Amino acid sequence: MAIGALTWNLSLYLSEFYQLRKQAWWRQLKRELKREFRDLDPNKMVYNMRGPYHVGSLAFGETPVLSVLKILDTLKLPAGATICDIGAGRGLPCLVAAALGYKTIGLEYFAVYTERSQRIAETMQVDATFVSGNFLYQPLPQADAYLVSATAFPEETRARLKLKLDEQAHILVAQDWILGPPWEHERMQKLPVSWGTAQFCYQRKTADCEANGGA
Ligand SMILES: C[S@@+](CC[C@H](N)C(=O)[O-])C[C@H]1O[C@@H](n2cnc3c(N)ncnc32)[C@H](O)[C@@H]1O
Image (tube, rainbow, N blue to C red; front, side):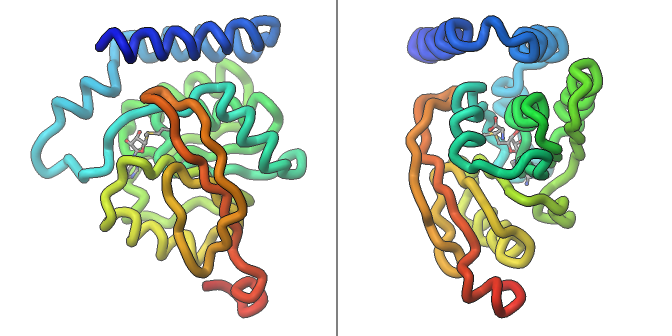
């Protein structure tokens, strides 16, 4: 790992440690992620991937715990609401939200991630379910709010995913992506991610559109 990335991730870890070290769920999450993923480097795996299975949107990156907490605090969803992370990676955002009492569903291309994330959810005894598959070719799970780390998604992936979100979603937090009508962009929040910072775009389906029964 480059020295810049190393120091950035170390600083993210230290601020988490300082703020969350007394939280049992945080200590357990860090321990289990380390244990489950010690033999699998997602960055390396994607980098080495070539050929027909490379769908062009698979770059790995992670939303750190403190950024997930900030997003949940901003969303202010009712207790027990369902959150779906589209492109769930190692499952960190879902596991954090589930540790706080939300019901979460992570949809992720790589089964090698989802099976490990599911084991972590079981160990932590939190309500998180992980499903593997390509989100472009399967129905999105039903949820009250959706998260999508779209920073590295090519335009074509965004266009196809938008059609699905237009049809089904009401509340969305998209990384570096403002969808446009029928979505109303409510606010933008710059937060740390594993590769630097990203703009988290909070969007809601417009009232007109909802009144007409969808997109
Ligand atoms: C930048 S990572 C974000 C992981 C997680 N959401 C987070 O914020 O920590 C994006 C994830 O989306 C997944 N992904 C990309 N395209 C996908 C697709 N078409 N179907 C399912 N997952 C996909 C990638 O494999 C990757 O794990």
